[in-house]
Length: 317
Length: 145
Ligand SMILES: Nc1nc2c(ncn2[C@@H]2O[C@H](COP(=O)(O)OP(=O)(O)OP(=O)(O)O)[C@@H](O)[C@H]2O)c(=O)[nH]1
Ligand SMILES: [Mg+2]
Image (tube, rainbow over all chains, first blue to last red; front, side, top):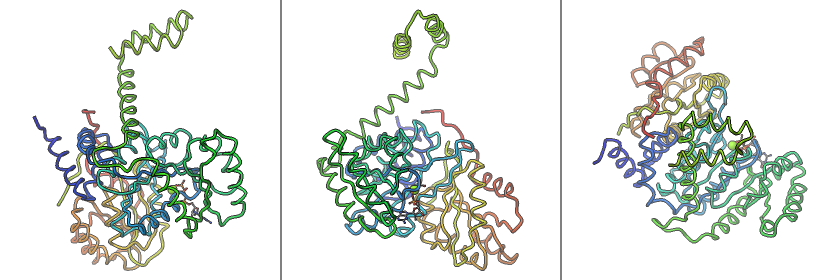
């Protein structure tokens, strides 16, 4: 039986797959809102998704990610590719509000119909930044955009999650030791497919590049070949090379065909949904039982792991 | 085509921008920061936006409201923007204007579909409240997840 929600979803998806930008924009809003219709939309677009190349840009605040993406868009456009961008901005933990400023630096593409830019606030979306982002990427992919770019601020966990969504993860640093230390702290060297020292017009850029290469040399063999590039986002210097390297890295995966999408991002989406469902069930699980488990753990009668297993068994029954 | 806004759990999303030639954007920065503190998602642009760029941006970001800051005679471009929004099926987006607008021009803007004109001295709280009301009923949580 078809409901009003099903009909609305079907109509929106038809327009989205037909390339209507307003339909994509509205579908993203539904996903951001966690609305019931979002699930229907996401299910219906799946057969159309899987052909986009997905590139993640991450790095500390202010290193020039948005400026670099602006230049990368220009380069992809000159290679006749259409580009959609999902720019994730942190929101104020207090008000929940946000100033979404990334696209400020991408104004150059303000009237190009081959470019679609969407700002996303990281606030309390169901399942966290990455769940929303992965879903938004699916929508952009299904809407037919050739290249989908994700911008996230490197803040620990988030960029690791982004690597599960992106085909290629570009980690952006700026010259100077401060950023290096931050990069290492956040485990960024472990996740980068490409490392970029942006602001190469500033002093220390080459030293920073050499330091990064040296650090990679100390890593496991497969990490040692991670390319380390330099760019000046504001002039476009080094950007054609960056895009060429990224396109090369994309070749690691077979050219995707519609309906036969690679499973990496789907795996992430399913795992995230599973975690979300489990969390919901845990939140509504039997309080008396939890108190009983707490009591037994606090008395030393039960290990925390055993208590967790008991709880999981009960919840999943 | 008009796509009426469904109730959603997303905060109010507003585009704060400037069209025309005037480059004074301190006022819009202050308003943007205040709206953020009131819990809204604010997309902010530099001044001197083309009308086409504003329409494209509003469409892609699926904003509920557009706030235009207008000094000099830039507000005379607003009816053009309203028409462009309608042409793109974005008539559901509410538009408010803030700045120096002579009385006779205010009528012109309201006729063109602008929801409200804020004159110098409008309080930030009044602006916030008006935008909240315009953006429609408060976010309704969705039962079926
Ligand atoms: N000199 C120089 N400045 C740059 C370069 N790239 C970016 N900038 C400047 O660095 C500042 C920050 O740039 P953004 O592109 O906003 O950096 P971001 O990493 O996106 O910042 P967040 O999104 O806030 O984390 C801006 O003032 C840019 O103009 C560059 O290659 N050289
Ligand atoms: Mg940015």
